[in-house]
Amino acid sequence: MSKILIIEQDVFLGDVLNQRIKKDGYQTLVINNGAVAIEQITLYKPDLIILDMEITTADVNKILEKKGDLPTIAKIPLIMISPSGNLDEIKLAVDLGVKDYIIKSQLSLDDLMLKIKTNLLKLTKSGMEGGPLVGKKIMWVEDDQFLSDLISRKLSKQGCKLLYAPTGEEALKVLEKETPDILLLDILLPGINGFDIYEKIKTVDRLKNIPVIVLSNFSQQSQLNRGKQLGAARFIVKATIVLDDLVKEIAAVLEETKK
Image (cartoon, rainbow, N blue to C red; front, top):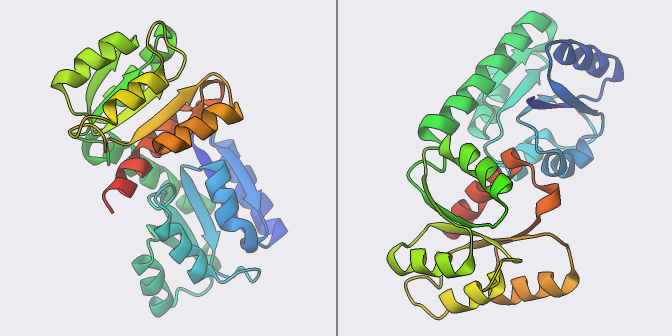
């Protein structure tokens, strides 16, 4: 189920949009305060954003600029509601990453739903055909077969090359021949644990700069500290994994390492 974030200061209009969008089966969140827009986008991780340009609780252009600067949310499509259809305003918004717009005085809920569905379809196609993971070599080390199968099915749709190992020993054998673009590394493994693997690859010039996302069963501070010391790009508790969010995090880390 796709998630839509509605940023609308007018409580009545926000409720109208919310009810119509939910009617078509989308999960929604409405916020009326633009000052917390970036925080809510980052926390909620919507698949699409609707933003009213008339919101007065924050500078809308600064919201767009900040969104574009953050790799984890920059590519989320955004539809703006323009108060007047002013071409200069629309051009500036498009330059700041707005994907589509609708004029408030001519607001048609059916037209809005069409724009939502069109932009989500584009997003799905880009994820399968030309998204940020296409051609990337992604390796994960995970002994939980069920979780591995879920990750495999999710990543296989992104057009990337998949490398997998269920144990630390097998992971090291794969890494003797392969140089992945990113490594998802479980900590609790039979035999060699994830941190031991991480320490070993840090000693190999070919592998030492591979970005690593650490997967763990627990959010223990000692594990967080050790992961940070080794240079982990992210630390994710397996119990809280949402596969769509995992794909976004992988894409964000790869984008960050290009800079």
